Image (cartoon, rainbow, N blue to C red; front, side, top):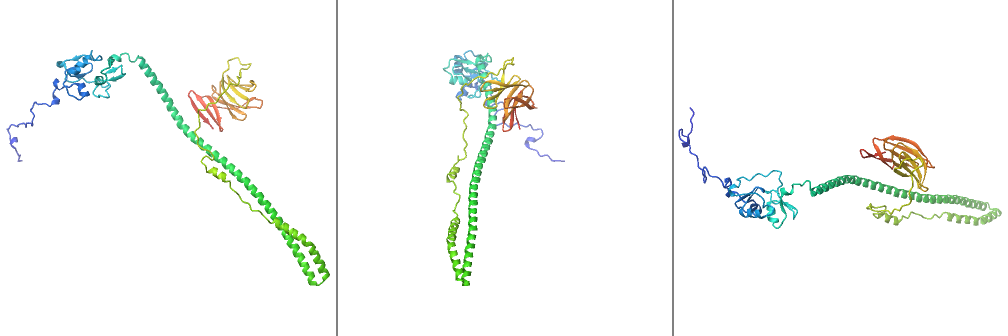
Length: 448
């Protein structure tokens, strides 16, 4: 049999007693549990100055508890004198819940914004009006202000301005994207220009080096030719002197005084010529020294930061002064319609080509005369010069690009064409590439 331990309180048949809590009775409540009006405080006093003053009234319109002073002021203020106030006996025990979507006051988060001061053009809660708008004469309750808000001029103006601002922001956003691409383009353009400048400088230096080396080669060739001639002259002189000396010694050894005398006289007569030739040889054997003297001015210039160029801020705001020269009538005798020039291209100093309602017209800008007309499908939209004697034309409705050659007399001849995937309008040519613009939808294409 198992043993059970027992305590005095657990003895069978003994009634358990509840332990009393210290300082509490079974029916006692904390101050926060009391619901009598004495524990409901005035909202304005509490929110504004932090004073806990018992509420005497309740404003149905403001959903605020008010003490006697605040309720008296409430009935005097123009904006609230028509509000419904409940007396002390009817004060609700629980403050009605404010709708979740009601705007809370930034200065007094427990309050709802329900007033509008026309004098200051500001909104606020009861505490704001009490503190900051005591002297204002045009304070209205919000409900009386917003009756026809959507049809008001102020709302229409605000809505219009916001839409305009949104549009401007959208444009600015697109401009930011364009500028991002522009920065990359400017960087690559600058790099290309730097490389071009470097190549041009290198070419100048290479050409200069080639010219200097040609001068040196010519000088060297002349000197070598001169030395070669002097060397041959030197060999001849040595041979002649050696021959004369040998012949003279031989005659002397023979003892034949007559032959020796004749030989001596001969050599004596030849000696001035030999001495003259020797002097000429000595002159020819003199080679002046030469060397390359570098341009110190060039070196100093190249050391400068802007010697071959510099990065500068290009001005986009420079305006050219344009003056009217003359007007050119592009209407021909066969035109029965009103002319509509969609594009014009400069071919040379005095030759223009225009696109006009199914025609390409070549015009002499000096005389103002049409010198050639060719029919094309409607509608030619853009023209650009692709080569010295060639133009390209976009045909919007046909969705294609046509190429024409232009003769010296201004005559146009069809060369070739290719189709594009949309309504092509603008066209430009640069560095062997075609740039096309489209509509419906708008886009840009680069053709290589």
